[in-house]
Amino acid sequence: MLIYLNGQMVEKEAALISPFDHGFLYGLGLFETFRVYDGHPFLLDDHLERLNYGLSVLNIKYRFYREETNNILQALLEKNNFTNAYIRLNVSAGSGDIGLQTEPFMEPNLIIFPKELPPAGELFEKRASLLKLKRNTPEGEGRLKSHHFMNNLLAKREIGPSPEQEGIFLTADGYLAEGIVSNIFWIKDKELHTPALCTGILNGITRQFVMELAGKMGLSVKEGLYTLEQALDADEMFVTNSIQEIVPIFSFEGHKLPGKKGHWVQRFHQDYRDFCQRLWTRNGLRRD
Image (cartoon, rainbow, N blue to C red; front, side, top):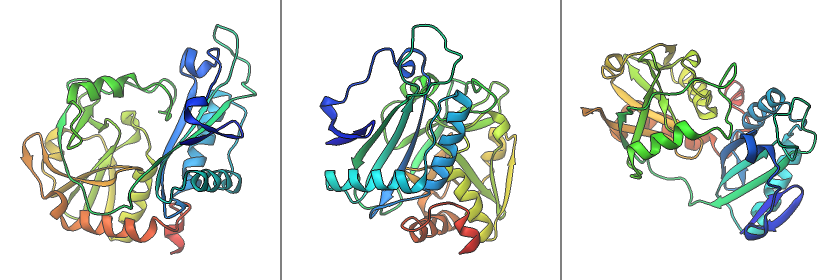
């Protein structure tokens, strides 16, 4: 398989970066994951906007643009003969001396990893349970999609390897936060609920898309500080991320839910299918 590394297409086994890269030494790096559907990188503009914001926070002097990035993606897909793919776009700070650097990083390492996926299809449901491990607080003002993934890794070890299980974090104050690699939503009486960003969660791109989509579907959207008891009163529940899309929950802490049979979950899934091959940004929903 070929990956993109600093302007070149290279075999994955031949990809090399310096051990002095501060992404390796200090976790100073960011990434975005998203899907390509029949050649279209869904919500690419939104992913690049979040990535560019994070780069400015970390003082990494690089900026991504749609046309340039999409040209690279299309070449990489063609080289690998992929039509539908998982993409990880990774930026690490680049090389520097040992020690914490305050000066800007001018030569980051840019890597794009593709992985072939089958065409998106049926809903895949999961059970969810609370994690004993609490969600850590962001390192800075807000949570970036950064290389700092120890909290997520330890949570995954706690919950185990089953793809049918999702672990849900609570904050240190006992409020619902997010899944290990997902955002959580539930519906009650035509209101879509999700934890607020002040809980320290990642503002997922699919999270933002679903909230926009809910408005078009006639659901009111509520963000807040929620307890487990409030979520267990839900009519339906699901989690989201850019690779797994909309994932219905059929059981949460042993409480039965409709899962993939839920009316609203099915509507979200169908609308996702309608838009995933053509939208560059969630803002396109407002013009559709």
